[in-house]
Length: 300
Length: 88
Image (cartoon, rainbow over all chains, first blue to last red; front, side, top):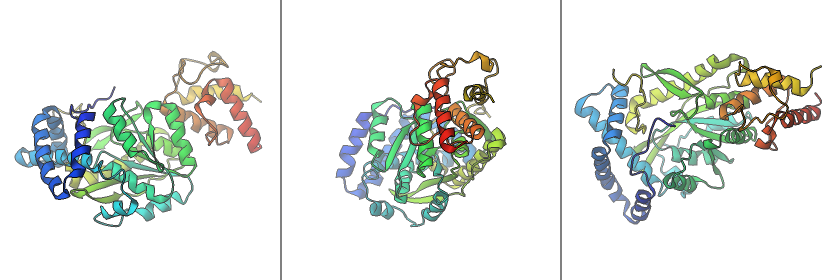
């Protein structure tokens, strides 16, 4: 059972409307439509708005209208993400690169990590546009294995199928041990594995300080790194303007030595979380977690 | 020298952090997936790590699949074949 939930508009009908209408409209109309759509969702999705408000209050320290305007931008960022599904899955590599405001995308860093031959785990989060990030990773001439939990819902399955391609493989974490074996085999073929590290799907997690309060993050990526020898590279694709992005990479985190136990894994996790924290300090209005991230301390 | 199966059973218990069973409690035909042990996606990593470290082999490669975790017997046979291939 997950402690987050999906809003009621995350369904196949809403997706069909987006995919049918948006590509037929001139692009200059997209941002004003997103402004209005985000406003509607901001007022209708009260439970999600409350959760995002709590999260952003802790992250930004803002209050009142200044805080609410940032909460609104989270909904706007989500509109950008949904519309990007009309363009990102089928875009050619030059088209993807043209959507970057800065050609620097950390390619050299990724290639250096892959040169060791143990594969690479890219640790990302629900920030900016993670689907765009996975397509950028395809440019390294090897398969990209995106590990995610695909809920058994038509809307989720549609998105999974949209993003899957010859180069981009979705590994459903609901498959349990079989999914883990698949990821480990991929790393041993020197492939890339992309994982979102800011939601706990498994019992194996650790609490680390996150904006001055402990929060749970999964240890799985770091254990996979320990077994495979693959480094973990924290990285995000941030939205700079409508359907325009910038890649942002941290420093590679080497595999934790086998004898270091959970303490070593936790230190590695902490390094990745520090990078997420640093990124969110300036881009918290692109952090799309519509549930209370600090449930135990939500009252303070 | 203990057999691979005898060496494997304490490794399974250690990896899964099971403290209320002894190696003797584990049957040779004990299923590793879907049975009482209920190995999940994280347990399998800990188990692979311990097996590879203990036996000095790379257990998970292209030809490894979840059928190899059908029972302790099957897993031990795979380890033996990998050890033989590696000349251990």
